[in-house]
Amino acid sequence: NCCYITGFVPLYQSWESFYTRNLYRRIRDCWNRPICSVAGATMDIMARETHDHGWNFNLTDKKIHVMNFGSYNYLGFAENEGPCKDAVEKVTNEYGITACGSRQELGYLDIHKELDELIAQYLGVEAAMTVPMGFATNSMNMPCLVGKGSLIFSDELNHASLVLGSRLTGATIRTYKHNDINDLEKKLRSAVVHGQPRNHRPWKKILIVVEGVYSMEGSIVNLPEVLRLKKKYKAYVYLDEAHSVGAMGPHGRGVVDYFGIDPKEIDIMMGTFTKSFGSSGGYIGGTKKLINHLRCHSHASVYSPTMPPPVAQQIIASMKIIMGLDGTGEGMRRIEQLKENCRYFRRRLHEMGFIIYGNKDSPVVPLLLFMPAKIAAFSRECLKRGLGTVVVGFPATPIIESRARFCLSAAHTREMVDKALDVINEVGDLLKLKYSRMELPQW
Ligand code: PMP
Image 1 (cartoon, helix red, strand yellow):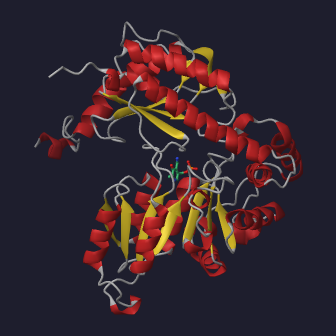
Image 2 (tube, rainbow, N blue to C red; image 1 turned 90 degrees about the vertical axis):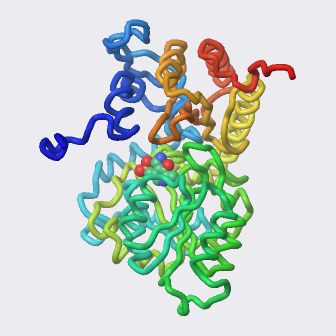
Image 3 (cartoon, rainbow, N blue to C red; image 1 turned 180 degrees about the vertical axis):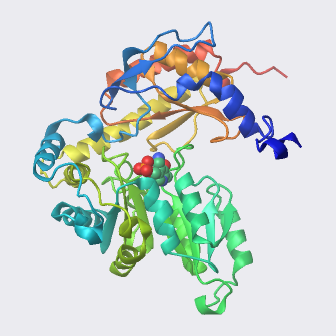
């Protein structure tokens, strides 16, 4: 009752409230460490003293140099060196930092046009458009695609930007179990009669929303099966390739490339540049009709400024390298290196006895800590030994599935990967994390 009077939410109303207010407050140094260098294969990080723990990582705003296994620098383009750096410097001198306007209001530069065309060529689709923020690419474009009277099927582990975008559409949303094709089909079957023409059913449109690689699980969407259901139930597919474009597939063109699927089978191809391209922003690729519609109606295109020119140039330069247009073979080398690093890292962790999630080729490697109490200890003990990584817990994961999330990069050398593995091994022993090596009782 006092909550109604004071307007405050009770402190322990939910687990979320308990964690964010009480527990995470005491270990907040694990998430808010400022970086003061390029977020490359290594980084300089500010480590803060936390006054409420006597035993923990005890540094007062000290800059330390550590290996970086937390940033989404999959192909090493965040390193700020080589041909990308030169091209970005040139564009910054010529165009400045911003275009000072939206696409329709003098904000569309020739480099934006070049980028749109290059993305379409890279993805193998008719047309593409960019948005200066990956999160807004989902949340601001989805309401332009479906609306009230439509039905969205969303994987339960879809990213927050997809969840927000789906909610903003006003459509009915049904979630299905993560990557569970049977559950998706069961729900599709209950929504439509198989074979019923689109204009004879209660829904204007049906949209299935999936990600290429799931960022907390490292799992890969079962795309061939999703496409089978799309055809069977005459639905549309929205594919978010944020963590897979550049990082997956023999040519680095995402999960579509990984499964050898014709990109034109996907109705809406989405991805971001924050990961494999070492830049920022997002894209939508598809038919000319789709892209023209979004350009004219989407809030992300009409009301937001275009991408800063240096950001756009970084994408152009890195994309050309990935596509092999520079003629050096550097793109393929990086794609191969990333794949090798992922497989090696996963195999070694598995041999050490850790429990890890995800597909063998996924650049995201979640290592299970299980107990929330181990989150801070893992993060601090790794940092003490020169390894920076990301730790995640409730509400981003189920309460007993706290985890550390490693992101591999083509910029990690074998020596660096081995060093990181040594640190993880040591911390794993210290915190008793090697669950699959636990002695089982003999019956
Ligand atoms: N989609 C997915 C699947 C993501 O994981 C993210 C962020 N990691 C986004 C979209 C948003 O992209 P950005 O960080 O570039 O805004």
